[in-house]
Amino acid sequence: MTKEDICRIVGVTVDKLENGDEIITLSGDNVDSLPDGLNIYGLRLVNCQSLKSLPDDLYVHYLHIQDCPNLKCLPVNLIVQHLYLINSDIETIPKKSLCWASLVLVNCPNIKTIPQSCIGYAQMLYIENCPNIVELPDIKYVHGQLELYSTNIKSLPKNLQIGDELCLVNSCIEEIPDGVRIGGDIYLYGNKVMKKLPDNLIVNGNLTISDTLIEKLPENLIVKGDLDIRETLIKELPQNLIVGGNIKGNDYLSDFSQVRKDVPLDISERIWKDTDYIKIDGELYRKMEEKEDYIKIMNSFLDIYRLQFMSDEIHEDSIFYAVRDKDNPYSYHITNTLE
Image: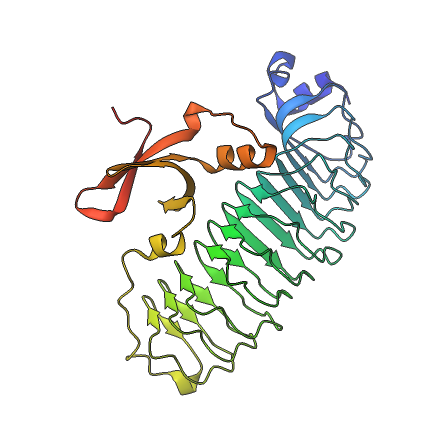
């Protein structure tokens, strides 16, 4: 397949294809090879039965490979920010493919390891039904979601900071370490090895521990959203429990009228206390400078890029100001400039 063939299929000119900004999708048996010198922002390969390899000089930020059974390997020197492998027989993720923006692996039976030098993800880390992956690298940050479905991974990195939800459905994770910060929902449905949660856990969203072996809720648990404890061995609720939403429990725990609902207004601030981060409107930002009326912040992409590559590089379009609401000290609005 030539560049001209690709242009004809996706309906763009060669000049537009080569500008480095395009996102293209290729599918079908006619996709048997890709040309050298392909420089695009995003490439989606779906159901390409005849494709056996990718060019060594492929330059792409976002790569999505799905149902391409004869594609067994990625270029050794491939550098990619976003990698999605779905129903794939790819055997390894190249060491240079740090996937520091997002990594999604679904039904990838041959992959055994994730690049160990990756310290964080600006968006998400999602692993589902990849039985040969048994451990995570020593990652420190996931600005978005960390989701592990039906995996054999047994532990989370210590002091991990997760900006949004933690989902460990049907997983083998044995515990949530005390130092882990989680900014959103926590879903542990079907986990059959975790028996307790850390004390003083604060959940800025829903907490689902149904169909687990957890026997007791931790002291000082605060759940902003719903609490689901159905099909567990929990027989009583702690007196200091706070749940802002609904409680779903077994029949013998049907009376939840005495559970406090006064969720603290500063719940997000409590989670991120003593860290360099603040969560505003569902997004996690690194604090650069804090003043009485505002906080100078950087977005997740710049933050993870700087940490991953030990860079001092600053992109002004990734820097913002979180200005405090004068009537609500826990509310902010974000602006590009203070002027």
